[in-house]
Length: 55
Image (cartoon, rainbow, N blue to C red; front, side, top):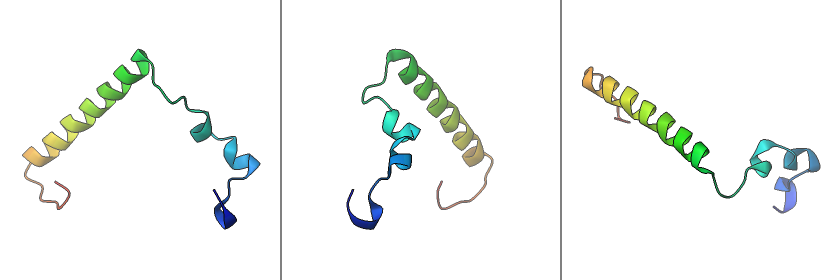
């Protein structure tokens, strides 16, 4: 990051910079479970007849 948008020491200490590159099996499973729940909510909203550009 260069110029005005250079990362500061405080910014580098956040969770974003501490995340591992590869996720373990448990974390992947939790992400998949969460995304499936989101898909079910979106399907329910779409089935209810709500009109939205995003759907």
